[in-house]
Amino acid sequence: MNKDRWVIKIGSALLTNDGKGLDKTAIGQWVAQISELKQQQIEVVLVSSGAIAEGMQRLGWKTRPENIHQLQAAAAVGQMGLVQTYESLFAKQGIHTAQVLLTHDNLANTEQSNNISATLDALLALGTVPIVNENDTVAIEEIKFGDNDTLAALVANLVGATQLIILTDQGGVYDADPRHNPDAKLINKIYMNDEKLKKVASRAGGSLGSGGMYTKVLAAKTAAKTNINTTIASGKTSNILTRLQAGESVGTLIHC
Image (cartoon, rainbow, N blue to C red; front, side, top):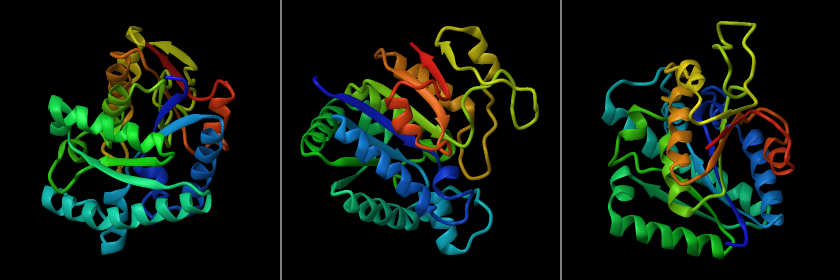
């Protein structure tokens, strides 16, 4: 493969400004950076959370429901706004997008996963940016556990990505929980088999997303199965994607 191929995952808290509706300014900045990556001959698959949070906002729900079917309904409503936002912002950059809704069963089935891989290859060859999300009306894996972290890693495996980028509201992986320990230090680089990873990856997540750092480290472990390095970084860092492309050490690089 001549081109780099990145799978970029953006979490719910980033996309919805902590639940205040889709943050179109922030999304526009990531879209502009992805456009720059494409100009550098980097193919991008975008795995986007945010459908449930956007659906909650559209439905006027203040708290995330526990009932799985209400969550699926919220995702179905929110997916409309999410796709409309991406389509319009990428169009301003002259880039076509494609919606791809997947389930873990799709990816576990050899015939289906081969078809998905071929379709994603075709979409990338056409210069589009596939927008991948879980098909929340029929599947519940990511709703219950992972905030699309696991899905992003599986997609990275499937498309032969050169790297997986997970953008979150944290700066990366720390040696302690930075939300409770002001002395916590960012780990710039760590190897997948380092025992420290297991100790520092917290299971706790925010109220909007279902994935804490624990699921992001698990995603990195999944990506490492096909020799893909993972970077976990703050999506709030200015020009995060283009800085990573330039080789800056931003966030945490989990080396396989």
